[in-house]
Image (tube, rainbow over all chains, first blue to last red; front, side, top):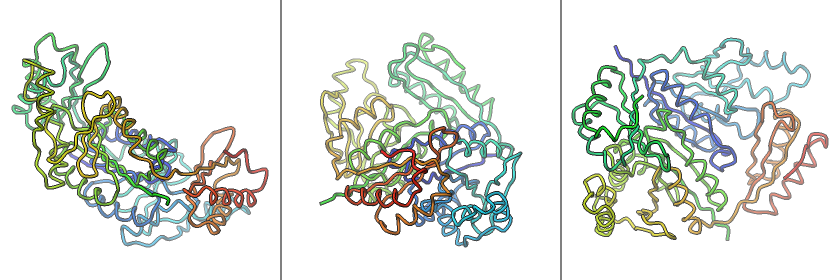
Amino acid sequence: MARDDTAGLIVIGNEILSGKVADTNSTFLARELRAAGVTLRRMVVIPDEIEVIAAEVRAMQPTVDVLFTSGGVGPTHDDVTMAGIARGLGRAVVRDPSLERKLRGYFGADVNDARLKLADVVEGTELEYHGNQSFPTFRVENIYILPGIPEIFRDKVVALRARFNSTPFHLRVVYTREMESTIAEYLNQTLGQFPDLMLGSYPKLNDPEYQVRITLESKDRDYVERALAALLSLLPPHAVVRTE
Amino acid sequence: MARDDTAGLIVIGNEILSGKVADTNSTFLARELRAAGVTLRRMVVIPDEIEVIAAEVRAMQPTVDVLFTSGGVGPTHDDVTMAGIARGLGRAVVRDPSLERKLRGYFGADVNDARLKLADVVEGTELEYHGNQSFPTFRVENIYILPGIPEIFRDKVVALRARFNSTPFHLRVVYTREMESTIAEYLNQTLGQFPDLMLGSYPKLNDPEYQVRITLESKDRDYVERALAALLSLLPPHAVVRTE
């Protein structure tokens, strides 16, 4: 009963496209999903524009089990993620009464339009409270709408961990001191025998220890182990630095 | 005669989607393009799959002035970028005679199928030699096909710098010690007066110096300076830590 859950990520932010900020959320999410056995199919970075967000949501949402968005959910003019997702799903943006109460309670006399904007959600959004987080995580249909600030993004992803629990990947790694083009034929032969293997080959420049890192993966542990044995039997013994 | 060139980036690599490797090429390219006055509209990370690459190329190529790809151009089975782009453009993959001669000369008796795969290009590809690079950069139509290895990717982008020379952006930055939701109304008022301003607002957690970094940008220097003056006249004086 291997489960093959898939995911996608839409990062929304002019600051990333303009090189002002390096996106780290995508790398974090990619690692978390992999550890949970979820296959990340696609990540995209788009600007803070309602129509672009809407089109991306429409295109990606039906193709994955779960879709994450990062960014564009703050109180200012350039935070248009809610409006974009709403348009993509054909839903309205509505002010959530429980969030409005929470914000009015927190800000008291200092509440203003910008602060109340944090209570605006896509119609039908589920507010999920995890652990001791004071502000909920937003989910509508299969879309988790996460803030772009890295510290908060990570907290929210970590809190969602238990939710993503697919069959884990089994990974083995071979480090070789041969060039990629020298060992390519052995990789091809291994794939010929094990066509369902996820086989990666990653050259590293200027590393004193190895030239290529080969990764063998599958959700079937035994399949990976047999593929590894086949590959090791093909590679010249001096080619292998070590396996992991 | 402000030129508003646009660009897109397709990063091809299972290793990034699976969290094994953190993509740094996208951040590098974003910064280089911004410095050259080029607007990066979209970045996407997709797997090493011919049909997915072809679909992405078809979707993005007509929407930008120049499209970059990163990754998937090596000698092994998972290097399918050429095949994907070719399919996307409705072109064939062909072996380039000049590259084949170069590879046969370099590898001598050690030449093999994997090595000769490096001479396989999308039909109609221009081979561009820059500086003292021994291997050319590939361009077909408006697509630059770059290798994923960060050192080589960067060398190729730097060598292409002179090619991307749009009207530069003019950027001013204001650091404030107020919360984003406190200053949002001043940002909105500024945008009301300067609707063409690119105005960004980026909160920073746990920074002792400031709470929000506000960026004002345009290709029109005077417009930015007038917008900055307007914003500063709105912000309470104590709110501003400094401007850049």
